Image (cartoon, rainbow, N blue to C red; front, side):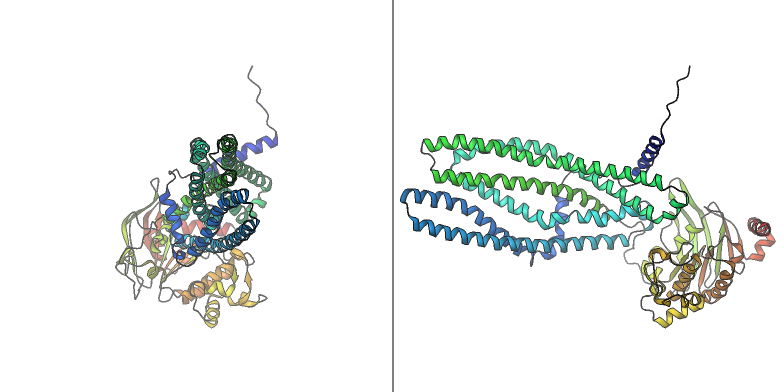
Amino acid sequence: MPEKEETLTEDEQQKQTDSRTLKRFHYSLDQAIEKPFNWMQMTRLFGYMKPYAKNILPIAILGMLLSTAVRLIAPILIGSYALDHIMDSGDVNFLALMVVVITGLYVISWIGNTLRIRFMNKLGQLVIFDLRKALFNHIQRLSHRFFDQRSAGSILVRITNDVNSLQDLFTNGVINLLMDVIMLIGIIVMLFIISPELTLAILIVLPLMFFISTKLRRNIRRSWQDVRIKQSMINSHLNESIQGIRVTQSYTQEKQNIGFFNQMNETNFEAWRNATQKSAMFRPLVEMSGAIGTAVLLWYGVHLIQIEALSIGEFFAFSLYIGMFWEPISRLGQVYNQLLVGMASSERIFEFLDEQPSVPEKQGAKKLKEVYGRIQFEDVEFAYDSDRTALNKINLEMKEGQTVALVGHTGSGKTTIVNLISRFYDPTKGRVLLDGHDLRDIRLDSLREKVSIVLQDTFIFSGTIMDNIRFGRPDATEEEIIEAAKTVGADKFISQLSNGYETEVEERGNVLSVGERQLISFARALLADPKILILDEATASIDTETEQLIQRALKKLLHGRTAVMIAHRLSTIREADNIIVLEQGNILEQGNHQELMDQRGEYYGLVKSQFKVLNAG
């Protein structure tokens, strides 16, 4: 008999689904960066302190040295000088003097600690500010391919969480490391001065502690890397969930989405627990070593007193130093944990900072003073990856002032062509020319300030409508902004809003309709006054009445400019000077509307198909 299939409950099925989704999601994000722990990278990280090395760091170091010196001097004053002297002479006045001196020293120590904490906090905040600024500025210059390969949440966690995790390292870790190293060296020196024999007996436990802590190091570092990856997953999912909440609710996937998030939250919790448990193992190790050291101190120290190799005062001072000895070692363990966290975060930060644009700025690239708008493609090939060829030896010319339309099925290469014109990507082979100049020989800012793009999915930034129209030309006056809006027909609906052009729009302009957002993008493009205008499905989301308004505006907008239009709605491109029909990265035919209709080829078939659909509707 065949075995009876196991029936899963609804919750078990959901967990399996969440687990499979989580696995796929995990592979789409950052993977752990396997590099050995090296001080060269940490030196690079600490290099961000260099601008403040002359004014802030010296004061913090001075404060640290003052407090450290007091802590090193106080035990020997209390034990070897005050206690032994009083026991031998009974001089009460000397005791009073020592109380005043030691109190004064601890006041100095308090002042030193105050300086250290205040200036290191200031230094830490300045370094974090500079690091986040450098990371954000660098990401702004990276090419589209970089963003194609990474989720928004993954990028966000580098700029926020990874940079924030370095804050403790800079505010406390660096100066504590220096302070504890000096403290340890000073304590060991004082211990040897008081009793070399007792010092050697106690320090015998250090090699064992060092061996065990070294074994922990690699595991702790990997654990903190895993924490960073899990945080990237959560941030990416949160970003997708917020952006796609309408789709989630439309398909009633709230329960599945909550289950998926809960599982990611659990994996993040487990990663944190694993990392903190491993990091917490260092402190008990120090305490165990301290307990062994204390036992040796009591047993061997009393023996030295009995044979008069050590005085009571020296034993008391030695005990104070031993009590102080394990404290910096314990803090060094904490600093080491901070270094491990900093290493994991800095690897991820420097991975981005070391990322070079796939569309680099050529050294000596020239700024075009005058742009006419003649575009040429010479044997252009392009592939997004080895398995996906988008263009095959494309040769075409777009003359100055022409309106060129790109037509074809999805995946035919239309968007790739306009991306190459804007130089968001470089051709795999061949070259793209503007007024006879290879785009790779032109400065990127010089090129892109002459090109405006209007997309089907218009992005509206948080702020006022006036700010959004002004985005492409920050120095534009209010009169110029209003004139641009009137030209494209946006002024009518803007004037009806409660605050007109000063109306605040939410993120992505959700308070506006799709057509209204599109009109704002047209006004934005017109205000920028480009020589080359790219319309990528720009009228696809606009109703017929608005489209007629846009068509009238486009005649003014396109005058004297080279325009490249992508449109599935073929009625919008009838007036184009040249219509290029693409199929799987190849040019099938080109000409104006009437010429292509007369050829009765692919374009003729597309027009007839749309005509039938419209009539059927």
